[in-house]
Each structure stands twice: as structure tokens, then as C-alpha cells.
Image (cartoon, rainbow, N blue to C red; front, side):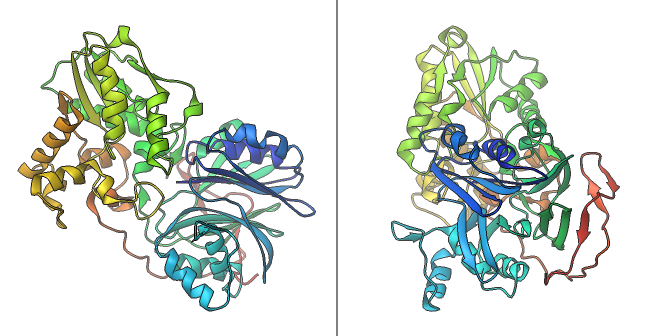
Length: 503
């Protein structure tokens, strides 16, 4: 997953862009990038796999000058991409994945369109997105057609002389949020980028909605669609605790997840409750609050610089981060029965080798693992995360129990079946833990607080969102009434208009 941020201000935006983009560092591990438009474009891209965004871009941003800019922390590819198009020059950053990249690339190559950003024979997805947009009659038409063409999801920020075009993917899988302060407008993947930069949340973009942000405010260029299935994993693991999506805070959801886990744990007695740092901490706090057991830290993370062990693309890097980032405290562990809350079990190897083993080695009496979501069954189709079914711990368990791979796993996704219980027992034995109990789908959905049909649960149930029905486009020059999400009431926001899509 990647994180994107954009800002348009009355003065130089570079400092705000620098800090706003940096607040997305938990979402990507490979590249960081910034582009600012003043008299001309100024663009910088750095590899951040072995260093923090701040250290790489600190000198760069102080030499950038312009009142509008976009930034990205990318999970895989170099961004922003610059394109001198038929619509004029623009820079673009994206968040998402196109599963039909090879097919679309082949189609464009046949039409004589070439690609410059190619690594190991693979086209840069953001460059592909830019060139798909360039096939439209205008930028809005191009973005609309691109969203309909790709299989997967794509939210984007496009910077040109008009301002910043912000487009949320048509399923609403990834969030985009508008913020305002006295001298600027901003758009972000993570609302945690707003408070310290002085912004207040003004609007959550609807799925498929396109907004133009410029010096005069925000102009709606395309209304949103009628399908919204935002990624549930944002609240469980991916998102930052201070962020909110659809008006629902991440930290609060994780605490509720922990409470649900504790309510189903009346049959065990423990001395200590904890959470695997960092994303499991709030789940553990919720468990402790509900159970009345003390929350302690048997494992502590050594500085944020080690990042997350889930997001790096190579297994070798993931294992190294998992090994080095967590340091055990023997004095807290020895002789205690411990409940360890975790956001999820994906592959299970890191949890077994670099978390659970440290607890046993330091003399834990019992180790009870409580993931805050159900067993992951399918690799994500809408963003860069787990890409292979064979990687998943639940699938390894099923393969072992069945003797071969099976297509219909419905008996294993239903927590009431014997097969589900056998699968969980197999995983518990493989992890070498005292007990293992997963969160149920219903409890997870209840903790988030949105209707199930408004959440993407694909990685747990394999069900894809239904394609949106076409939106009837009725554009006016009048201000439109939107929800002021921070206050949970309707209001008119200064500077927000609808406009004719042809300009």
C-alpha cells in the first residue's frame, strides 16, 4: 500500500508538503517522492528502503518553491511520474494496483505508445495510469475511463497548472480526505497528516469522485458512485492510529476489536495482556480494558526506524525487520501466562520465529495468541500486500488437512464448522502456542461500525465488490451541500462547487 498527500496554499507549499507526505511513511517502504509546481515543476524521488523519508528529503524541500504540490510514500515503484501530455504537462501519484497491467501495457504498445519507467521488464504502474488518462478527451474523461479500464483500484493525485485533481478509486477501497486551514487546502490518504499541519477535515471523497483543488477552493468535477467498499484492513492493521476513515477512528476500532476478543475468552486465565508492537498494541489495550487484566509490554519495538515487517516486498527483508525490531523484556515475560493480541496472521512465519519464540525463550508460562481479524484466505486484489495464496498460513493449514489445494473454502471461513476448528488447531500447533483464537467476521465488522456491505472483506471471504452502476452526471455552477464529517452534520463548505467537466 502507498500513501499520497497534496496541498495548494497561498504561499510556498513545500514545507507543508514535506511534513504531510512524511506522515504516510508507515504505508510504504521503497520510494518517496515530491513534486512542486511554481514557475515550473520541481520533482524529487529517493529510495527510502534503508532510510527515513525525512532524512532523504530534508534538503530537497527547502529548495522547492511553488504554491501547489503532491507527494507519495510508495510501496513498490518510483513516483511521482511526470508526463508532457496533450493536456499539457502534469505530475501524478497513485495508490492501488492494476491486476491487468500486462494486458493494458500490451494494448498501448501496439498503438505505438512507449514506456520509459521500466524495471526488470515491468512497466511502472503509475506511468501506465498516466498514459491511460492521456487517452481521454480531457483530463476528467481520461481519469474516468482509466478507472473503468483497470482491474483493481487506483486513487490518485494529478498536479498541473489548474491545481490538484484528486480522484478516489471507484470502489472506495482506498480513502482520500480533503482538509482546510486558513491559507491552504490539502488532500490525504491518512487524516493523521492533518492535525500537526493545522488542517481540519472538510470532506471524505466518495468512491469514483473527482475533485479539483486550487487557490479558490475545491471544485467537484465528477460526483461519486453508489458502491462503497472501503478496505476493512485499514482499521485492523494498515492505518495509523490517529487516522480516521469514513469518520471512524483507527485507534478506537482496534480497542473495540480487543474488547470483542476478551468477551470470547472467558475460559482462560492469564497474568498479562499485551499487543505485538505497534499495530497490535491498541487491540491489546482493548482486551485489557474488557478483561480487567494488566496491560504490560513483554516486547518493545526499537525506534520507528525499523518500519513494518508486512510491507517490504521481499521475504528476506520482512524477516530481518521482524527479527530486529522487537526486543523482549525477560523480567515481564518470565513465569507469566500471556495473551498476545496481534492485528492478523498472514504468513505466520514471523509471528512464530520472531515473536512467539522470544516469549518462550524468556520463560513464558503460557502464550495465547489473539488475532484481531479472521484467518486470511485470499491475497488482496486491490492493493499491494500479500500476493500469493500459498503464502497464507490458513491456506497451508487447509492444504495439510485436505492433502491438496481446494477451491471451495467456505467450510473453512465459517467459524461454526468442524473444519474451521481443525484449521485453527493446525495453525496453533504450527505456531507452537498454548491457544489460538481468531476474531470473527461479525465481531470485526461490529468493531468498525460500518454496514458489512460497505466494507471490502475480500481477503477473508473472497467476495469482490460489485461494479458501480454509471453515475448520471449533472454538473452545475452552484455550491453543493456536503457533510461536514468532523461535526457529523450537513453544512455548506466555502469554496466547494460543481463545475462543467469539459474544462
